[in-house]
Image (tube, rainbow, N blue to C red; front, side, top):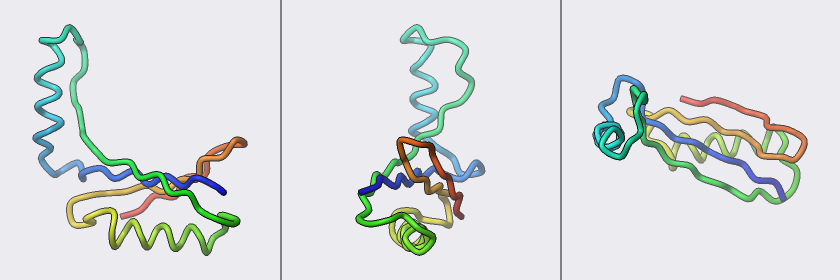
Length: 91
């Protein structure tokens, strides 16, 4: 089994109120020098069998149609492996 990770983030032009709230709180908590915070989602999918182009295409389709709202969010798909990480970006 392999782990495929889908990270979903708001597009840069979309307001991120949760990220802004965290950013405003950081100096009060003693964390200085952080100029921006963006909040996102991470999905970890355990994929049975080889993670070939067909499997990645299915995960990309899943991310595009179900995990991310591509009107306001971008996503990346990557395979976590012991030998390295392969990354495929999406919408």
